[in-house]
Figure: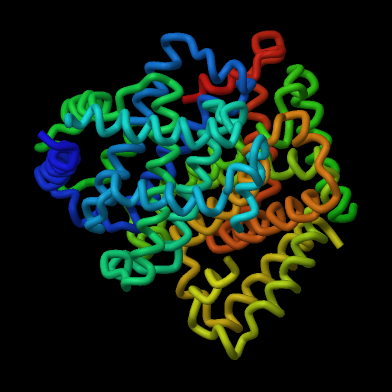
Length: 119
Length: 119
Length: 119
Length: 119
């Protein structure tokens, strides 16, 4: 089974989940973007008072919770991509290529803040 | 190639991208969660003044921009999952099963707000 | 009592609250910005599945919850402004003047999306 | 002039700003919550790759930008409070009192993460 099919399978499962509950009318891209950022914030909440180092060494219980937040974000992301007919994987590679040109190694080495220049 | 491998391939490409730029020290889960929510907000920004209906009927130009925002979110999500050793797809299925039990069809049909009860 | 003093009074009360709990070391602007966006997301969560019209006609119980979310955002905002020595009110007026020049009435009348052009 | 009046004056100025541009129809609480979190994310963006220490020692240019982000958040917060008829200052004090009971000094001293227990 190809990766594309794996994504399609997940997208279909989520479509079915929404349809069975008659939640499709609520799943406008606008609303899904709100749901996605709410889940992203639940992820951020786990890290807000941790040091960076602590965030690299989560205990098992926190890690399990963080995993489920990542799943929630992923679920809404796949649902949104499905609604908008976007192929996440190929778009990600397209974006990586853009980033490679935007942030040439020799110019940004060791300087993550260079990224903020994109505004 | 299996889906797992496809994800691994993307995760590796992103790891390489960060390593070449010596950005790994900046990529603590704490910082990546911040970068992810910033990208999620750039998605939300596209929808903030649109009606729900308009968000379902994006023009080609907006759709292209929205696609790249989805890619950015996906990129940071894969990067985070890679740093934390999380398998996004299998965790997503685990979460869907939890949701199926939490939101039984007969109880939540047509009521998306039932979801807010999870707080 | 002037407005400035009212803000100072609130900022002081929050400083004291943090000091008594020895939370000052956690209250770096970085961490406070994370806490603020987490509270903003709790606000968004109340509205994510509502129509715009419904969001204008909240029932009493939801309104009480929304009020407390607004308070949480305000608390972190005042705390951040205090840490960074920013006068929120005078900066707000400065920003309104910038916006008045950026969005001339005759150009943006009835078009909120004009605001997105600021990116 | 009392503080209450100062807030009212700012709220009125923002109401006027929106009315002159015929933006009131866009300013549903739902949409304003989205605009607010977008501004919160622009704040977070400034801090995402900084260490906590660096975020406490911003250079003048960054501080000026951060100030304007705080103003944007404040503007949408006041606008939302105005639309929902919420008195931000008195609600903030109410919330602080709730927090004082929820986080007794002796239990949470030096442990900011105690706050996460509120979920």
